[in-house]
Image 1 (cartoon, one colour):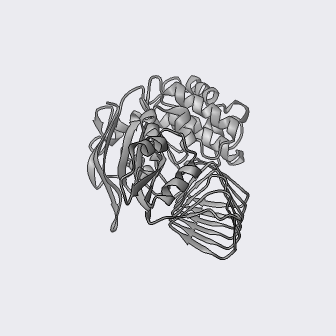
Image 2: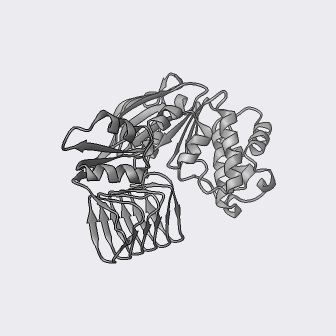
Image 3: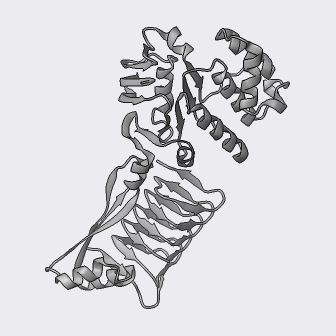
Length: 385
């Protein structure tokens, strides 16, 4: 194994930034290290590279214990930190020559030429680092990480600050390096991981919550389930008709409500949100399906299934509910711990711990604890929680 992490711990005061994390990465693997901001990704990487001493456990790189023999371990590691440490007064080639000298690289001129070409720095190579855009500064840091041809690459958000074309180019560099090196790179962007790697390690609040192939995690992925029980046994023929797709969602819900169904809706967060399951609704749900289809502004709903032809006026409050498909919700609405499918939500809304499936949110909204994909208007603040 090129990287072996065993029971790694880092404590800051009373906070465990990293809590007994263990994993291994083999040569030829490109592994994504995922988690929300503050999960402990960068701290873990700093301990693997020897930048930070662990408070417990061990990190071994290419069969060398990083804590016991840090110099030998660092010779085998190429590290691009999140805060890219560059000497702004140096020219690109001058800086790479300095880094190559630190690593005692043979044939420095040829190696510098190779990494400049590899990272796409050719047009900028005669500039001072201070004159570079953020994207080219990031490329310079990546070139420095590659200069000594390391066995292991530790890349902390390597595409940060790059434009879409640059991101594709750097992805290709990482893929090429992953053919004969061990690559561990961190990100909080799911698309980055999907584009580059087959395996993902996920941490949250310092603890490891998943370590599996991406395809397996996606199969376990985000889904919504509505568990239904009836006051009286339901005949087999009705159960079959409800479960074989004969009824539309609206008709099925209508049928179940009329027969006194008791609903329990659960949100199973997607794997990026660490696989936690939370009860969203556990009440005798009411089916909101008024003949006129309109709800006055300022009303509050809890434990409600909201389906067409309803439209919700502005300034309402919705909690622990299932909304949609095809429901329009007015502006300035507060929605908490609910599932929203194929619907439109107005501007200036506040959403907290919601599952959004193919829905549209207006501008100037606030979204916290989000699962699933959505389309978002301008000036919307999103906290993935």
